[in-house]
Image (cartoon, rainbow, N blue to C red; front, side, top):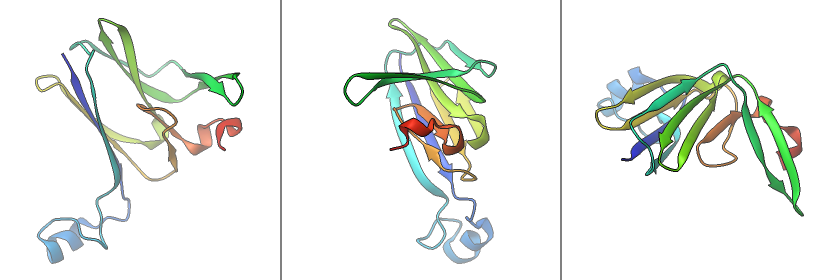
Length: 139
């Protein structure tokens, strides 16, 4: 089973009124609804989805010449999909999360982020506001 994930960064300057009046409710070059959109599919996801809000996310890996890093990112929401190969977490800073919609029948998760802060996407499926992103990894 697979889940489709869509992530949208809302443009806080978008005017629904202008879109209705000038462009039949649609976006236009001077009035875009979303600054960007990511779409991907988890192919090893069951219909078991766990939402975790009370645990930090551990961002770990290597940088440069095999130098390991390990940071706890707090104030996140994690959508954990359970599959045959283990759990997969899709992570968002709470500060940028505007809303989310889970459609279990069609195996879809849509997440809408606000553009109040810059959002970093260090690895696929992880969206962290710049103010919570480790300074050592910003280059």
